[in-house]
Image 1 (tube, rainbow, N blue to C red):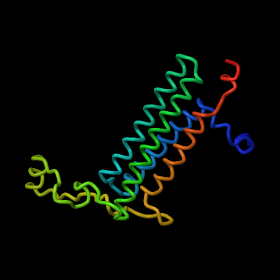
Image 2: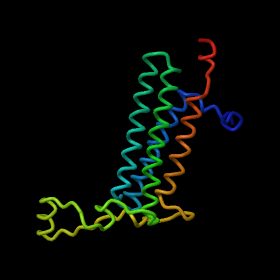
Image 3: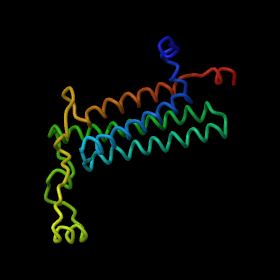
Image 4: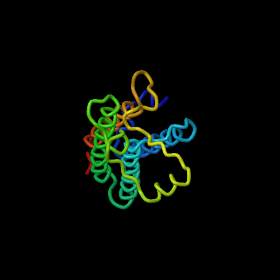
Length: 179
């Protein structure tokens, strides 16, 4: 009930870093679950989006460790600003991916069927021994829910996380008021 009566409780910088870390790990887990249980292998841009969430998780852990070593509120506020930049970067990657899916602009040649696909010697040897290769296309969404692909939903999640990170970075805490 506390969360329902105090909805801005999570905006405190240190609590927000924990929330952002949990959110990044949850979204990574969801992506891996879609891959494993939904049999939806990721494309090149999907993997780029995951890399940004891994960076956000690593930054969250580093911020939390630093907040234990020095006064927590300045580290957490600066950390929330860093998380905001990371999440805005994630949103940029997701907007690019969604635009590729909607054919607003061309995507990377490696996953949109362009002429310059990188093939290694190991790939050629495996192909010579009968292994089939299917490139997961970046310009074809695996599925859509309510009209949005996973990249489209990721734009919204990243925007929400970025805005809340900025809000948290700008929030004045009681520790700051007494300092």
